[in-house]
Image 1 (cartoon, helix red, strand yellow):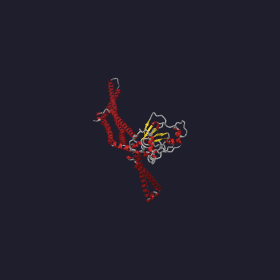
Image 2 (tube, one colour):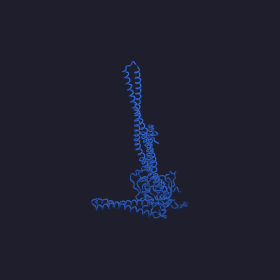
Image 3 (spheres, helix red, strand yellow):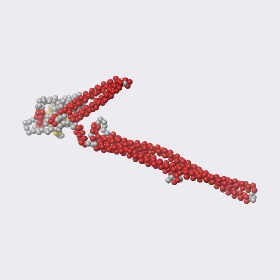
Image 4 (cartoon, one colour):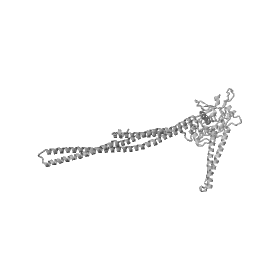
Length: 560
Protein backbone atom coordinates (compact mmCIF):
# COMPACT_ATOMS: atom_id res chain seq x y z
CA UNK A 1 0.00 0.00 0.00
CA UNK A 2 1.81 3.05 -1.29
CA UNK A 3 0.53 6.42 -2.30
CA UNK A 4 3.27 6.61 -4.94
CA UNK A 5 1.88 3.67 -6.89
CA UNK A 6 -1.78 3.83 -5.96
CA UNK A 7 -2.22 7.60 -6.13
CA UNK A 8 0.38 8.53 -8.74
CA UNK A 9 -2.11 10.82 -10.52
CA UNK A 10 -3.72 12.40 -7.39
CA UNK A 11 -1.20 15.11 -6.66
CA UNK A 12 -3.84 17.83 -6.15
CA UNK A 13 -6.05 15.67 -3.92
CA UNK A 14 -3.09 14.69 -1.79
CA UNK A 15 -2.21 18.34 -1.40
CA UNK A 16 -5.75 19.11 -0.20
CA UNK A 17 -5.83 16.09 2.12
CA UNK A 18 -2.55 16.92 3.84
CA UNK A 19 -3.71 20.52 4.36
CA UNK A 20 -6.91 19.17 5.91
CA UNK A 21 -4.79 17.02 8.25
CA UNK A 22 -2.88 20.06 9.44
CA UNK A 23 -6.18 21.89 9.99
CA UNK A 24 -7.42 18.98 12.12
CA UNK A 25 -4.24 19.10 14.20
CA UNK A 26 -4.60 22.84 14.73
CA UNK A 27 -8.23 22.35 15.70
CA UNK A 28 -7.20 19.77 18.31
CA UNK A 29 -4.55 22.17 19.65
CA UNK A 30 -7.23 24.84 20.02
CA UNK A 31 -9.49 22.35 21.81
CA UNK A 32 -6.77 21.44 24.33
CA UNK A 33 -5.92 25.12 24.84
CA UNK A 34 -9.53 25.93 25.68
CA UNK A 35 -9.60 22.95 28.04
CA UNK A 36 -6.56 24.32 29.90
CA UNK A 37 -8.26 27.70 30.20
CA UNK A 38 -11.35 26.01 31.63
CA UNK A 39 -9.19 24.11 34.14
CA UNK A 40 -7.46 27.31 35.21
CA UNK A 41 -10.77 29.14 35.55
CA UNK A 42 -12.25 26.26 37.54
CA UNK A 43 -9.21 26.14 39.82
CA UNK A 44 -9.42 29.90 40.37
CA UNK A 45 -13.10 29.69 41.22
CA UNK A 46 -12.45 26.83 43.65
CA UNK A 47 -9.67 28.78 45.34
CA UNK A 48 -11.85 31.88 45.61
CA UNK A 49 -14.67 29.75 47.02
CA UNK A 50 -12.34 28.22 49.61
CA UNK A 51 -10.92 31.64 50.50
CA UNK A 52 -14.40 33.15 50.78
CA UNK A 53 -15.45 30.72 53.51
CA UNK A 54 -12.12 30.66 55.38
CA UNK A 55 -12.42 32.17 58.87
CA UNK A 56 -11.02 35.66 59.23
CA UNK A 57 -7.99 35.92 61.47
CA UNK A 58 -8.41 37.43 64.92
CA UNK A 59 -12.19 37.40 64.61
CA UNK A 60 -15.04 35.78 66.47
CA UNK A 61 -15.59 33.55 63.47
CA UNK A 62 -12.15 32.01 63.98
CA UNK A 63 -13.10 31.01 67.52
CA UNK A 64 -16.08 29.06 66.17
CA UNK A 65 -13.71 26.65 64.42
CA UNK A 66 -12.82 24.87 67.64
CA UNK A 67 -15.81 22.54 67.21
CA UNK A 68 -15.27 19.26 65.37
CA UNK A 69 -17.96 20.04 62.80
CA UNK A 70 -16.47 23.43 61.93
CA UNK A 71 -12.94 21.98 61.95
CA UNK A 72 -14.16 19.36 59.48
CA UNK A 73 -15.57 22.15 57.33
CA UNK A 74 -12.23 24.00 57.54
CA UNK A 75 -10.44 20.80 56.50
CA UNK A 76 -12.85 20.52 53.57
CA UNK A 77 -11.99 24.09 52.52
CA UNK A 78 -8.26 23.32 52.71
CA UNK A 79 -8.67 20.12 50.71
CA UNK A 80 -10.70 21.98 48.11
CA UNK A 81 -7.78 24.36 47.81
CA UNK A 82 -5.50 21.37 47.11
CA UNK A 83 -8.14 19.99 44.78
CA UNK A 84 -8.00 23.25 42.83
CA UNK A 85 -4.22 22.91 42.69
CA UNK A 86 -4.57 19.59 40.87
CA UNK A 87 -6.68 21.24 38.20
CA UNK A 88 -3.92 23.79 37.81
CA UNK A 89 -1.48 20.88 37.37
CA UNK A 90 -3.75 19.47 34.65
CA UNK A 91 -3.71 22.81 32.86
CA UNK A 92 0.07 23.18 33.15
CA UNK A 93 0.79 19.64 31.94
CA UNK A 94 -1.60 19.89 29.01
CA UNK A 95 -0.05 23.19 28.03
CA UNK A 96 3.51 21.89 28.14
CA UNK A 97 3.00 18.30 26.93
CA UNK A 98 0.28 18.82 24.32
CA UNK A 99 -0.32 22.42 23.31
CA UNK A 100 3.31 23.49 23.27
CA UNK A 101 4.63 20.30 21.65
CA UNK A 102 1.93 20.14 18.99
CA UNK A 103 2.33 23.82 18.13
CA UNK A 104 6.02 23.27 17.41
CA UNK A 105 5.24 20.07 15.52
CA UNK A 106 2.66 21.85 13.33
CA UNK A 107 5.27 24.39 12.28
CA UNK A 108 7.71 21.62 11.38
CA UNK A 109 4.95 19.74 9.58
CA UNK A 110 4.06 22.73 7.48
CA UNK A 111 7.69 23.18 6.45
CA UNK A 112 8.07 19.49 5.57
CA UNK A 113 4.84 19.45 3.60
CA UNK A 114 5.88 22.56 1.72
CA UNK A 115 9.21 20.96 0.81
CA UNK A 116 7.64 17.71 -0.42
CA UNK A 117 5.05 19.39 -2.58
CA UNK A 118 7.68 21.76 -3.92
CA UNK A 119 9.66 18.71 -5.08
CA UNK A 120 6.49 17.24 -6.59
CA UNK A 121 5.72 20.41 -8.49
CA UNK A 122 9.31 20.59 -9.70
CA UNK A 123 9.10 17.03 -10.99
CA UNK A 124 5.82 17.79 -12.72
CA UNK A 125 7.27 20.89 -14.31
CA UNK A 126 10.24 18.86 -15.57
CA UNK A 127 8.07 16.17 -17.16
CA UNK A 128 5.87 18.84 -18.67
CA UNK A 129 8.94 20.50 -20.17
CA UNK A 130 10.06 17.18 -21.65
CA UNK A 131 6.59 16.68 -23.06
CA UNK A 132 6.67 20.09 -24.69
CA UNK A 133 10.06 19.32 -26.22
CA UNK A 134 8.69 16.07 -27.58
CA UNK A 135 5.69 17.80 -29.04
CA UNK A 136 7.87 20.45 -30.68
CA UNK A 137 10.15 17.81 -32.19
CA UNK A 138 7.16 15.88 -33.41
CA UNK A 139 5.59 18.90 -35.04
CA UNK A 140 8.90 19.82 -36.66
CA UNK A 141 9.30 16.28 -38.03
CA UNK A 142 5.73 16.38 -39.35
CA UNK A 143 6.31 19.74 -40.99
CA UNK A 144 9.58 18.62 -42.59
CA UNK A 145 7.92 15.51 -43.92
CA UNK A 146 5.18 17.54 -45.53
CA UNK A 147 7.71 19.93 -46.99
CA UNK A 148 9.71 17.04 -48.40
CA UNK A 149 6.56 15.58 -50.01
CA UNK A 150 5.68 18.89 -51.58
CA UNK A 151 9.27 19.33 -52.84
CA UNK A 152 9.21 15.83 -54.33
CA UNK A 153 5.92 16.44 -56.03
CA UNK A 154 7.20 19.77 -57.39
CA UNK A 155 10.34 18.09 -58.74
CA UNK A 156 8.35 15.36 -60.43
CA UNK A 157 6.06 17.98 -61.96
CA UNK A 158 8.98 20.02 -63.22
CA UNK A 159 10.72 16.93 -64.58
CA UNK A 160 7.62 15.91 -66.56
CA UNK A 161 7.13 19.37 -68.04
CA UNK A 162 9.02 19.67 -71.41
CA UNK A 163 8.81 23.39 -71.32
CA UNK A 164 10.90 23.66 -68.16
CA UNK A 165 14.58 24.16 -68.59
CA UNK A 166 17.03 21.63 -67.35
CA UNK A 167 18.43 24.06 -64.87
CA UNK A 168 15.04 24.55 -63.25
CA UNK A 169 14.57 20.80 -63.09
CA UNK A 170 17.96 20.40 -61.41
CA UNK A 171 17.13 23.12 -58.99
CA UNK A 172 13.84 21.41 -58.08
CA UNK A 173 15.65 18.08 -57.68
CA UNK A 174 18.21 19.58 -55.32
CA UNK A 175 15.43 21.25 -53.32
CA UNK A 176 13.60 17.96 -53.02
CA UNK A 177 16.75 16.21 -51.82
CA UNK A 178 17.34 19.00 -49.25
CA UNK A 179 13.79 18.63 -47.90
CA UNK A 180 14.20 14.89 -47.67
CA UNK A 181 17.42 15.34 -45.74
CA UNK A 182 15.76 17.78 -43.37
CA UNK A 183 12.90 15.33 -42.86
CA UNK A 184 15.40 12.60 -42.02
CA UNK A 185 17.16 14.87 -39.53
CA UNK A 186 13.82 15.79 -37.93
CA UNK A 187 12.94 12.16 -37.74
CA UNK A 188 16.16 11.33 -36.02
CA UNK A 189 15.69 14.21 -33.58
CA UNK A 190 12.10 13.25 -32.91
CA UNK A 191 13.11 9.67 -32.27
CA UNK A 192 15.83 10.74 -29.88
CA UNK A 193 13.51 13.14 -28.09
CA UNK A 194 10.83 10.48 -27.82
CA UNK A 195 13.22 7.99 -26.29
CA UNK A 196 14.43 10.60 -23.86
CA UNK A 197 10.87 11.57 -22.91
CA UNK A 198 9.85 7.96 -22.37
CA UNK A 199 12.84 7.50 -20.14
CA UNK A 200 12.03 10.69 -18.20
CA UNK A 201 8.38 9.74 -17.96
CA UNK A 202 9.23 6.31 -16.66
CA UNK A 203 11.62 7.85 -14.15
CA UNK A 204 8.94 10.39 -13.16
CA UNK A 205 6.06 7.98 -12.56
CA UNK A 206 8.03 5.06 -11.22
CA UNK A 207 10.78 6.74 -9.27
CA UNK A 208 10.45 10.49 -8.52
CA UNK A 209 6.70 10.70 -7.86
CA UNK A 210 6.57 7.47 -5.80
CA UNK A 211 9.45 8.70 -3.65
CA UNK A 212 7.84 12.09 -3.12
CA UNK A 213 4.42 10.62 -2.43
CA UNK A 214 5.98 8.08 -0.09
CA UNK A 215 7.51 10.89 1.94
CA UNK A 216 4.16 12.69 2.00
CA UNK A 217 2.49 9.47 3.13
CA UNK A 218 5.04 9.01 5.91
CA UNK A 219 4.57 12.63 6.95
CA UNK A 220 0.79 12.18 7.12
CA UNK A 221 1.10 8.93 9.04
CA UNK A 222 3.40 10.61 11.56
CA UNK A 223 0.81 13.34 11.98
CA UNK A 224 -1.89 10.75 12.65
CA UNK A 225 0.32 8.91 15.15
CA UNK A 226 1.23 12.19 16.84
CA UNK A 227 -2.37 13.29 17.30
CA UNK A 228 -3.19 9.83 18.68
CA UNK A 229 -0.34 10.07 21.19
CA UNK A 230 -1.53 13.53 22.17
CA UNK A 231 -4.99 12.19 22.84
CA UNK A 232 -3.45 9.49 25.00
CA UNK A 233 -1.42 12.10 26.85
CA UNK A 234 -4.64 14.08 27.28
CA UNK A 235 -6.10 11.16 29.22
CA UNK A 236 -2.88 10.39 31.09
CA UNK A 237 -2.61 13.95 32.40
CA UNK A 238 -6.03 13.54 33.99
CA UNK A 239 -5.21 10.06 35.23
CA UNK A 240 -2.02 11.20 36.95
CA UNK A 241 -3.87 13.55 39.30
CA UNK A 242 -6.66 11.10 40.11
CA UNK A 243 -4.71 9.55 43.06
CA UNK A 244 -4.03 12.98 44.54
CA UNK A 245 -7.63 14.06 44.01
CA UNK A 246 -8.64 10.79 45.63
CA UNK A 247 -6.46 11.63 48.63
CA UNK A 248 -8.15 15.01 48.87
CA UNK A 249 -11.54 13.34 48.85
CA UNK A 250 -10.29 10.78 51.39
CA UNK A 251 -9.16 13.60 53.68
CA UNK A 252 -12.57 15.24 53.35
CA UNK A 253 -14.19 11.92 54.26
CA UNK A 254 -11.77 11.50 57.17
CA UNK A 255 -12.60 15.02 58.39
CA UNK A 256 -16.31 14.25 58.12
CA UNK A 257 -15.84 11.06 60.13
CA UNK A 258 -13.98 13.02 62.82
CA UNK A 259 -17.12 15.04 63.62
CA UNK A 260 -18.03 14.17 67.21
CA UNK A 261 -21.38 15.45 68.38
CA UNK A 262 -20.65 14.53 71.99
CA UNK A 263 -17.41 16.46 71.96
CA UNK A 264 -19.10 19.49 70.40
CA UNK A 265 -21.81 19.37 73.04
CA UNK A 266 -19.16 19.29 75.77
CA UNK A 267 -17.38 22.24 74.17
CA UNK A 268 -20.64 24.21 74.24
CA UNK A 269 -20.78 23.54 77.98
CA UNK A 270 -17.19 24.68 78.42
CA UNK A 271 -17.80 27.79 76.31
CA UNK A 272 -20.94 29.02 78.06
CA UNK A 273 -20.86 27.46 81.54
CA UNK A 274 -21.22 30.25 84.11
CA UNK A 275 -20.31 28.26 87.24
CA UNK A 276 -23.48 29.32 89.05
CA UNK A 277 -25.81 26.87 90.75
CA UNK A 278 -29.45 26.63 89.61
CA UNK A 279 -31.98 28.61 91.71
CA UNK A 280 -33.44 26.86 94.76
CA UNK A 281 -37.08 26.42 95.64
CA UNK A 282 -39.11 29.59 96.21
CA UNK A 283 -40.58 29.76 99.67
CA UNK A 284 -44.32 29.99 100.17
CA UNK A 285 -45.54 33.44 101.13
CA UNK A 286 -48.63 33.60 103.33
CA UNK A 287 -50.84 36.57 102.47
CA UNK A 288 -53.71 35.49 104.75
CA UNK A 289 -52.45 37.39 107.84
CA UNK A 290 -54.36 40.70 107.81
CA UNK A 291 -52.03 42.45 110.25
CA UNK A 292 -48.93 41.71 108.22
CA UNK A 293 -47.62 44.63 106.30
CA UNK A 294 -46.88 44.52 102.63
CA UNK A 295 -44.52 41.89 101.40
CA UNK A 296 -41.97 44.43 100.31
CA UNK A 297 -41.75 46.08 103.73
CA UNK A 298 -41.69 42.88 105.79
CA UNK A 299 -39.21 41.11 103.56
CA UNK A 300 -37.02 44.18 103.37
CA UNK A 301 -37.06 44.66 107.15
CA UNK A 302 -36.21 40.98 107.67
CA UNK A 303 -33.39 41.14 105.22
CA UNK A 304 -31.93 44.17 106.93
CA UNK A 305 -32.43 43.00 110.49
CA UNK A 306 -29.08 41.23 110.63
CA UNK A 307 -27.28 44.13 112.20
CA UNK A 308 -26.65 46.09 109.02
CA UNK A 309 -27.79 49.65 108.94
CA UNK A 310 -30.42 50.43 106.34
CA UNK A 311 -28.80 51.88 103.25
CA UNK A 312 -29.36 55.55 102.87
CA UNK A 313 -29.96 56.63 99.33
CA UNK A 314 -29.21 60.19 98.56
CA UNK A 315 -32.70 61.05 97.37
CA UNK A 316 -33.90 60.45 93.86
CA UNK A 317 -30.70 61.78 92.40
CA UNK A 318 -28.80 58.63 93.37
CA UNK A 319 -31.28 56.33 91.75
CA UNK A 320 -31.36 58.52 88.69
CA UNK A 321 -27.63 59.06 88.32
CA UNK A 322 -26.70 55.84 86.58
CA UNK A 323 -28.97 56.06 83.50
CA UNK A 324 -27.35 59.35 82.47
CA UNK A 325 -23.71 58.24 82.73
CA UNK A 326 -21.87 58.04 79.41
CA UNK A 327 -21.77 54.51 78.10
CA UNK A 328 -18.41 52.77 77.88
CA UNK A 329 -17.78 51.14 74.53
CA UNK A 330 -14.24 50.01 75.45
CA UNK A 331 -12.90 46.60 76.41
CA UNK A 332 -13.79 44.79 79.63
CA UNK A 333 -11.71 44.89 82.84
CA UNK A 334 -8.27 43.36 82.88
CA UNK A 335 -9.23 40.65 85.40
CA UNK A 336 -12.27 39.58 83.30
CA UNK A 337 -14.50 40.18 86.33
CA UNK A 338 -17.37 40.97 83.97
CA UNK A 339 -17.59 37.25 83.09
CA UNK A 340 -19.23 34.42 85.03
CA UNK A 341 -16.81 32.48 87.27
CA UNK A 342 -16.23 29.53 84.95
CA UNK A 343 -15.72 31.70 81.87
CA UNK A 344 -13.52 34.05 83.87
CA UNK A 345 -11.36 31.11 85.00
CA UNK A 346 -10.92 29.98 81.38
CA UNK A 347 -9.99 33.49 80.21
CA UNK A 348 -7.50 33.93 83.04
CA UNK A 349 -5.94 30.53 82.33
CA UNK A 350 -5.69 31.43 78.65
CA UNK A 351 -4.03 34.73 79.53
CA UNK A 352 -1.54 32.97 81.82
CA UNK A 353 -0.66 30.53 79.03
CA UNK A 354 -0.16 33.37 76.54
CA UNK A 355 2.10 35.24 78.96
CA UNK A 356 4.13 32.10 79.60
CA UNK A 357 4.61 31.69 75.84
CA UNK A 358 5.76 35.31 75.61
CA UNK A 359 8.19 34.71 78.46
CA UNK A 360 9.58 31.65 76.69
CA UNK A 361 10.11 33.68 73.51
CA UNK A 362 11.97 36.35 75.45
CA UNK A 363 14.08 33.68 77.17
CA UNK A 364 14.95 32.12 73.82
CA UNK A 365 16.02 35.51 72.49
CA UNK A 366 18.08 36.14 75.62
CA UNK A 367 19.82 32.76 75.31
CA UNK A 368 20.59 33.41 71.65
CA UNK A 369 22.03 36.85 72.41
CA UNK A 370 24.04 35.42 75.30
CA UNK A 371 25.62 32.85 73.01
CA UNK A 372 26.31 35.58 70.45
CA UNK A 373 27.97 37.66 73.16
CA UNK A 374 30.16 34.72 74.18
CA UNK A 375 31.21 34.29 70.55
CA UNK A 376 32.06 37.98 70.30
CA UNK A 377 34.10 37.76 73.50
CA UNK A 378 36.08 34.78 72.19
CA UNK A 379 36.39 36.24 68.69
CA UNK A 380 36.41 40.07 68.88
CA UNK A 381 36.90 40.37 65.14
CA UNK A 382 33.36 39.00 64.62
CA UNK A 383 31.69 41.79 66.59
CA UNK A 384 31.55 43.97 69.67
CA UNK A 385 30.28 42.09 72.73
CA UNK A 386 29.07 45.33 74.31
CA UNK A 387 26.69 45.95 71.40
CA UNK A 388 24.26 43.32 72.69
CA UNK A 389 24.23 44.48 76.31
CA UNK A 390 21.49 47.02 75.69
CA UNK A 391 19.27 44.42 74.08
CA UNK A 392 19.95 41.93 76.87
CA UNK A 393 18.95 44.59 79.39
CA UNK A 394 15.70 45.22 77.50
CA UNK A 395 14.95 41.49 77.42
CA UNK A 396 15.57 41.19 81.16
CA UNK A 397 13.15 44.05 81.83
CA UNK A 398 10.55 42.52 79.52
CA UNK A 399 10.89 39.13 81.19
CA UNK A 400 10.47 40.71 84.63
CA UNK A 401 7.38 42.61 83.50
CA UNK A 402 5.86 39.48 81.98
CA UNK A 403 6.55 37.48 85.15
CA UNK A 404 4.83 40.14 87.23
CA UNK A 405 1.87 39.96 84.84
CA UNK A 406 1.81 36.18 85.22
CA UNK A 407 1.83 36.49 89.01
CA UNK A 408 -1.01 38.99 88.86
CA UNK A 409 -3.19 36.82 86.63
CA UNK A 410 -2.29 33.66 88.58
CA UNK A 411 -3.46 35.45 91.71
CA UNK A 412 -6.80 36.26 90.10
CA UNK A 413 -7.00 32.69 88.83
CA UNK A 414 -6.38 31.27 92.28
CA UNK A 415 -9.02 33.64 93.66
CA UNK A 416 -11.59 32.47 91.10
CA UNK A 417 -10.78 28.80 91.59
CA UNK A 418 -11.12 29.23 95.36
CA UNK A 419 -14.44 31.10 95.04
CA UNK A 420 -16.31 28.75 92.74
CA UNK A 421 -19.55 28.11 94.70
CA UNK A 422 -20.51 24.79 96.25
CA UNK A 423 -24.01 23.34 96.35
CA UNK A 424 -24.69 24.65 99.88
CA UNK A 425 -24.04 28.26 98.83
CA UNK A 426 -27.20 28.60 96.77
CA UNK A 427 -28.66 31.74 98.36
CA UNK A 428 -25.53 33.73 97.46
CA UNK A 429 -24.62 31.92 94.26
CA UNK A 430 -24.94 34.93 91.96
CA UNK A 431 -24.65 37.88 94.25
CA UNK A 432 -20.97 37.15 94.78
CA UNK A 433 -20.26 38.49 91.36
CA UNK A 434 -21.52 41.88 92.42
CA UNK A 435 -20.02 42.12 95.93
CA UNK A 436 -17.67 45.00 96.77
CA UNK A 437 -14.56 42.78 97.10
CA UNK A 438 -14.58 42.80 93.34
CA UNK A 439 -16.57 45.87 92.34
CA UNK A 440 -15.33 45.70 88.75
CA UNK A 441 -17.70 42.79 88.25
CA UNK A 442 -20.63 45.16 88.41
CA UNK A 443 -18.72 47.75 86.46
CA UNK A 444 -18.50 45.54 83.38
CA UNK A 445 -21.59 43.35 83.71
CA UNK A 446 -23.57 45.50 81.34
CA UNK A 447 -22.65 44.97 77.74
CA UNK A 448 -22.89 48.57 76.63
CA UNK A 449 -23.72 50.45 79.90
CA UNK A 450 -20.95 51.94 82.03
CA UNK A 451 -20.66 50.73 85.61
CA UNK A 452 -22.80 52.49 88.23
CA UNK A 453 -19.80 53.77 90.17
CA UNK A 454 -18.20 55.38 87.11
CA UNK A 455 -17.53 59.09 87.02
CA UNK A 456 -19.34 61.48 84.76
CA UNK A 457 -18.72 64.94 83.40
CA UNK A 458 -20.69 67.96 82.29
CA UNK A 459 -21.07 66.34 78.88
CA UNK A 460 -23.06 63.60 80.56
CA UNK A 461 -25.33 66.20 82.12
CA UNK A 462 -25.93 67.55 78.65
CA UNK A 463 -26.77 64.05 77.52
CA UNK A 464 -29.25 63.93 80.39
CA UNK A 465 -30.97 67.07 79.19
CA UNK A 466 -31.44 65.52 75.76
CA UNK A 467 -32.94 62.32 77.15
CA UNK A 468 -35.41 63.91 79.61
CA UNK A 469 -38.52 65.70 78.26
CA UNK A 470 -37.94 69.45 78.45
CA UNK A 471 -41.21 70.24 80.23
CA UNK A 472 -41.37 71.99 83.61
CA UNK A 473 -37.97 71.08 85.02
CA UNK A 474 -34.84 72.96 86.07
CA UNK A 475 -31.23 71.82 86.27
CA UNK A 476 -31.93 69.61 89.29
CA UNK A 477 -32.95 65.98 88.73
CA UNK A 478 -35.30 66.13 91.70
CA UNK A 479 -37.78 68.27 89.77
CA UNK A 480 -38.20 65.98 86.77
CA UNK A 481 -41.32 63.94 86.20
CA UNK A 482 -41.03 60.33 87.50
CA UNK A 483 -41.04 57.53 84.94
CA UNK A 484 -44.33 55.63 84.70
CA UNK A 485 -44.50 52.07 85.95
CA UNK A 486 -44.74 49.38 83.29
CA UNK A 487 -45.31 46.42 85.60
CA UNK A 488 -44.23 44.75 88.80
CA UNK A 489 -41.49 42.31 89.75
CA UNK A 490 -40.65 39.89 92.51
CA UNK A 491 -37.11 39.54 93.87
CA UNK A 492 -36.00 35.93 93.52
CA UNK A 493 -32.79 36.45 95.49
CA UNK A 494 -31.32 39.01 97.85
CA UNK A 495 -29.17 41.63 96.13
CA UNK A 496 -27.11 44.16 98.08
CA UNK A 497 -26.73 47.06 95.70
CA UNK A 498 -23.74 48.91 97.10
CA UNK A 499 -22.66 50.57 93.86
CA UNK A 500 -23.83 53.87 92.46
CA UNK A 501 -27.15 53.53 90.63
CA UNK A 502 -28.12 50.12 92.07
CA UNK A 503 -30.75 49.38 94.70
CA UNK A 504 -30.80 46.68 97.39
CA UNK A 505 -33.65 44.17 97.33
CA UNK A 506 -34.60 41.30 99.60
CA UNK A 507 -35.66 37.88 98.45
CA UNK A 508 -39.43 37.79 97.91
CA UNK A 509 -39.84 41.57 97.85
CA UNK A 510 -42.39 43.04 95.40
CA UNK A 511 -41.38 46.20 93.50
CA UNK A 512 -42.40 48.28 90.49
CA UNK A 513 -40.69 48.02 87.09
CA UNK A 514 -40.06 51.36 85.40
CA UNK A 515 -37.58 50.30 82.68
CA UNK A 516 -37.11 46.92 80.98
CA UNK A 517 -33.81 45.16 80.39
CA UNK A 518 -32.20 46.80 77.32
CA UNK A 519 -30.06 43.77 76.65
CA UNK A 520 -27.34 44.67 79.19
CA UNK A 521 -28.60 42.37 81.97
CA UNK A 522 -30.10 45.11 84.23
CA UNK A 523 -33.68 46.13 85.02
CA UNK A 524 -34.66 49.47 86.52
CA UNK A 525 -37.12 49.21 89.43
CA UNK A 526 -38.75 51.49 92.04
CA UNK A 527 -39.63 50.81 95.66
CA UNK A 528 -41.19 54.17 96.55
CA UNK A 529 -40.98 57.79 95.54
CA UNK A 530 -37.46 58.17 96.93
CA UNK A 531 -35.92 54.80 96.12
CA UNK A 532 -35.25 53.45 92.64
CA UNK A 533 -32.30 51.92 90.83
CA UNK A 534 -31.05 48.92 88.87
CA UNK A 535 -30.90 45.24 89.80
CA UNK A 536 -29.65 42.26 87.77
CA UNK A 537 -32.48 40.98 85.58
CA UNK A 538 -31.73 37.39 86.62
CA UNK A 539 -32.49 38.33 90.24
CA UNK A 540 -36.12 39.31 89.62
CA UNK A 541 -39.20 37.84 88.03
CA UNK A 542 -40.90 40.57 85.97
CA UNK A 543 -44.67 40.88 85.39
CA UNK A 544 -45.15 43.49 82.70
CA UNK A 545 -48.46 45.31 82.36
CA UNK A 546 -48.55 46.43 78.73
CA UNK A 547 -51.59 48.63 79.37
CA UNK A 548 -50.02 50.37 82.36
CA UNK A 549 -49.64 54.08 81.70
CA UNK A 550 -50.20 55.49 85.22
CA UNK A 551 -47.48 57.28 87.05
CA UNK A 552 -46.20 55.65 90.26
CA UNK A 553 -48.84 54.66 92.82
CA UNK A 554 -47.79 53.39 96.25
CA UNK A 555 -47.66 49.59 96.28
CA UNK A 556 -49.29 49.55 99.71
CA UNK A 557 -52.44 51.14 98.36
CA UNK A 558 -52.67 48.56 95.61
CA UNK A 559 -52.21 45.84 98.21
CA UNK A 560 -55.08 47.25 100.22
